[in-house]
Image 1 (cartoon, rainbow, N blue to C red):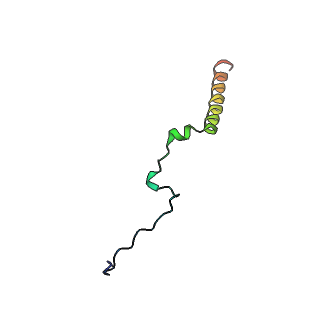
Image 2: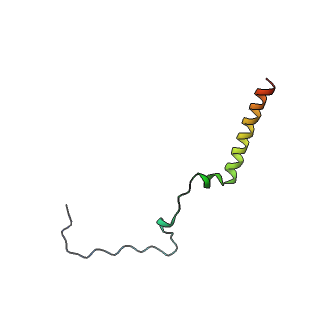
Image 3: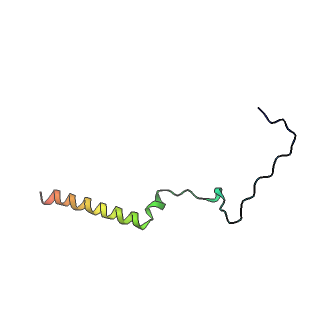
Length: 61
């Protein structure tokens, strides 16, 4: 049911000055995730294991 009262609209609630504005936040994507050292170490270890397994299959089996 529509509001039929003739009151003035309420003022928006004020936020503290220390709170970041939601519109100012940037979305973090794949490049941000790849810039994290623990992830790069993990991916490097996995890549090295895959490389060693491939070399083993090609040259030693």
